[in-house]
Length: 267
Image (cartoon, rainbow, N blue to C red):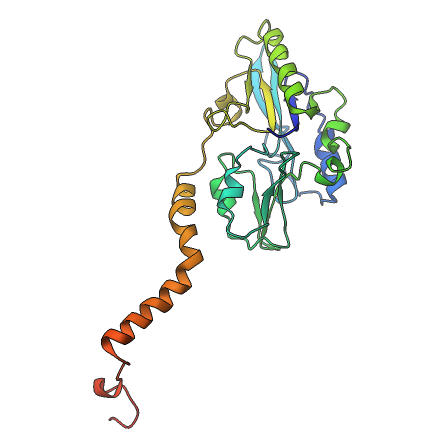
């Protein structure tokens, strides 16, 4: 099991968006143009240049507004569907010892198979560069024994970074304490994919569907078709074509276009 993870406690999030700003600063990402839609959430979804987004779910409460906040990014799954779906070796990979999932934009061909495979739709296709982009887990920082930019910037400790087993143990204690105030509080992520889980997990105050998250995240059904049927064919597809042409030549002989009136010198 990977050693590192991030634990996001929504009960501590105040919606300051320091995590989003720190992410953009570290990754040198431009700001996205926004417009007011009636919500304090400034973007409707992640984009190719916004790897982390604080979502706002607003509800009327006693003449005021109750905000349900979620700092959202890639889950960096164990046994990641996006890695399985990628047809290009090295374009979408998972660190064996750290656990994060990374995109090599120089190798990405923009096929968007990873976009389809992800149950959360995390990878975003950038039409200008024709490649996908997503949270990097601050790989350069992590590989140099530094914490992720979002976790470092969070003023309330809503995003914790460190040893996965330790964070998971802390999350279980935290959820039991939270249930006294939020009866539906639960941990989301570690049980995904039949227990293989994710390396970014959450303490939610409500059911996952309340936040727009799939209760039981599963990879797209198309992934099985690609991985088990179509992908193996790409390895011998060209050879099969050549073999088929050779069999046809031996059985039928060379195509005689002149006999069909398609050759030269026929009117």
